[in-house]
Image: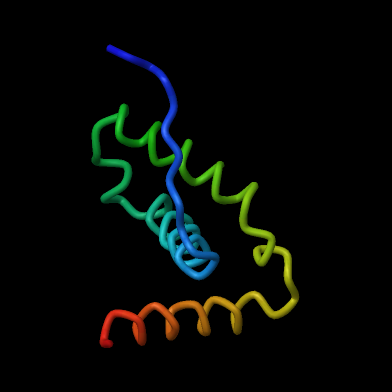
Length: 78
């Protein structure tokens, strides 16, 4: 199999919401029940997001996450 890399693009809002989802999901029993290979891929994705999303360390993180979720919801309803 070809192991070359691919690039994915997410908006800042999408990246923030996805990072929050993965943080929560990794603590759930459902995560522990999935195949180890899938866990490893999700851990890798989560790590990449943690390094890319600077809002994680913002004092207003909760508000930024709320705004990001609202923005994505609004985009989907249009």
